[in-house]
Amino acid sequence: MRLFIAINFNEATRAELISLRDELQSKAASGRFSASENLHLTLVFLGECDARQTAGAKAAIDAVNFGPLTVTIDRIGRFRRDGGAIWWAGVRENKQLLNLHGELTDKLTAAGFQLEKRAYSPHITLGREVVTNEQPREIEPFSETVSSIEFMKSEHIRGKLTYTVIHAKFI
Image (cartoon, rainbow, N blue to C red; front, side, top):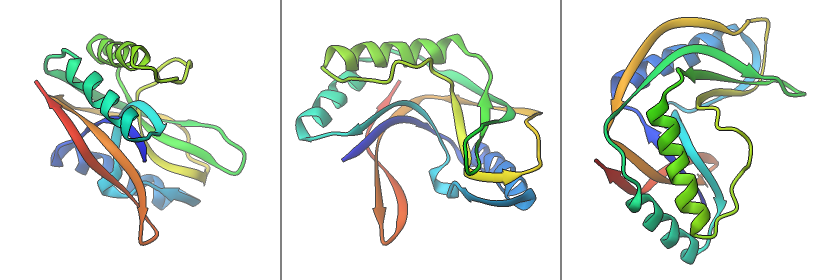
């Protein structure tokens, strides 16, 4: 199974993200845009995992201690790539979020996972392979107080990328 740990958003935040995605899509010459139900903030990407690894990841998630944290989305940006950029909604720097990511990473590493070494850059992907003349920009910030993290499975079902919650940790 292809797995990751994420923050999923409430309806109000998701509506704001959909609006940003739709605006970008309307100004783009081409691209692959995130499905509304797939808009999320990845905390840790695990990749392909077997049953033993899945159980280890669930245990690591359950061992994490975190309180409610506020996620504020305040900008639109891109990662330049050949063939089109990855466009995203950016999350304002947040010590609680970085601490949560760090604790998850520590517990998963102790459980034997080999994780990416690059710095964590919290963002919500709006589209991939996007070709547009638009420029990254500030937006009117919007926020949500998060009280859970979800362990997600990524799979293609009838040709559609589908994310399913397989475990959750609530505060």
